[in-house]
Image (cartoon, rainbow, N blue to C red; front, side):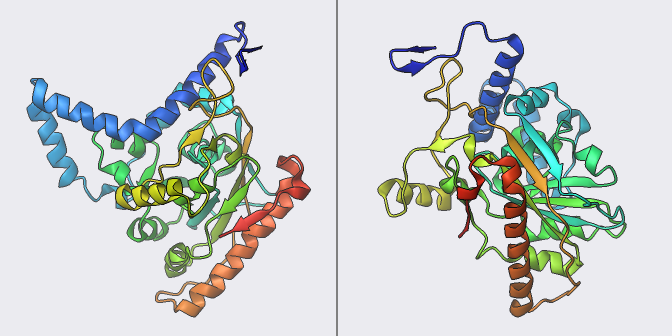
Length: 343
């Protein structure tokens, strides 16, 4: 229904769909402002409640005994991963996990899943690997997954516990190597190689990823000899547009400065609202399919040279391009005109 130039949601929307929209909207608020809100809650508990001493003990624990947990495999919680809220979130888009034909994993080996693109909120990888509603257990029942994410998430009191529960670990070389060095195998590290900077290129129908200068993950994998697995989320860039920010503009310059200062890419998303479709911060209802490609075998080299890293990087880059070209016709409209641009 359109009124005054605004496309409004119909009044007779089923409750199930309303709950899906609420889940999607809440997820954006949690990821964008959750850490900040938990710092405010912490200050309130310390200065205005009788629980100040418990809160201070918790902060002390975070900064001492628990400070390295984020680089030592984390501490997942099946309870957090199974919250019903995540099922509503999955069904809103919907999000699906798929794998290419004849692809399987050796339960006695560790793998590094290299995911693209980041998008605004990593919608596909989050549902597929962070929750128990994405289908991971059905495809890979013999592996545990750890999602590599921003270190800032583990500094925010309370918020960090949800990130841990979802299987979060710090996206650092030490953390990746810890996951890949498990002697009995069975671990999968989930890494968004392009990082939050890719959010600046998130626009519907556009697939720009950052890879050319990202080589640290190659070195980590070579040290353990763990296969690299290309993973691509088709539709990830369609759930949000963003305020125009061409390179060289004052908007982009400010965003880059803020990113360097706070570590998070402050892209300004344009989605939809709870009751209208034209503008808002709720993700758009677009299908997202995360496709797991075939593992790429690499040698085990404890101290790889820059030349060896470059060689494996070039091979992985081609594997990712091949995955995109092979699968895009299945999941994208007008696929012939959609190109993968690697920065």
